[in-house]
Length: 312
Image (cartoon, rainbow, N blue to C red; front, top):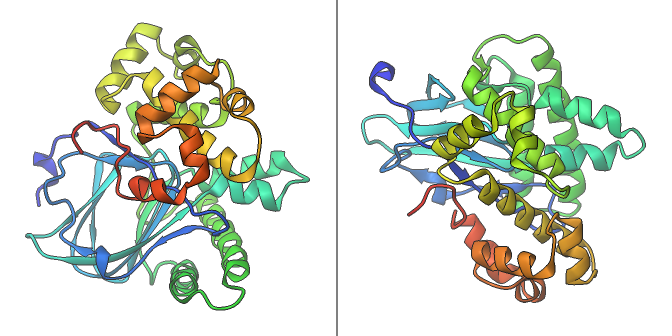
């Protein structure tokens, strides 16, 4: 594969849902032995940190504007909102498994008495994307494999065990990011601007945000920001903001018995009717229907039915 001939396409938003009570989402097993990149000509990003482990196969991991060769016994650590893609070599199958981690949520839970430290630590953890061999960072590779095995078999007290290992993993990532080395990739200037906007939306979606606010934090004019966002994301900033608000509403409804009026207010919607309309547009059901049987609709999210790329 020739990196020089590749052209960056539009970016997909692929949304994942961590099941209630689980420490992370683990995508394991034979379903992830596949021909990666087949029919996909654009990068994507997620709402959680993605950690991948390659057991077999060869190909390339595309991290923003760099193409990193992969082979067995390599792992990737990709922050949320970071554009990436994986492609198998010569139409051959590769075996990967994945973890999706809510970094900010986990740290806020652990450091609830020191939220400022949790925010600073999360920023350091999300600083870069990696694609490295296990031999380069054996402790990190070992933690990833151990977490996957705990999530695979789910023995007694597995959730507590995984939470402890996740904290150790995140601390190791933070330490390495303090002194970058090896295949650790910063984002291009263009995508770093976009990531600033995406992170800002993720942190402030419950507030009364305007496109002007997002343009300002991205250091762009409002007109230029709308154009760049639409071109990169294949959706308007307003549509993406509503998508994140719906995601936040799902998380909020799992943990509370509040009225739909209060959920709408807490998640940034100006009225219940606006909340209902946008929620149904994204998930195909009303918030009340989702609240009664959320398990019926999470599978839709796991199958990437929510995507910024039309027709996926």
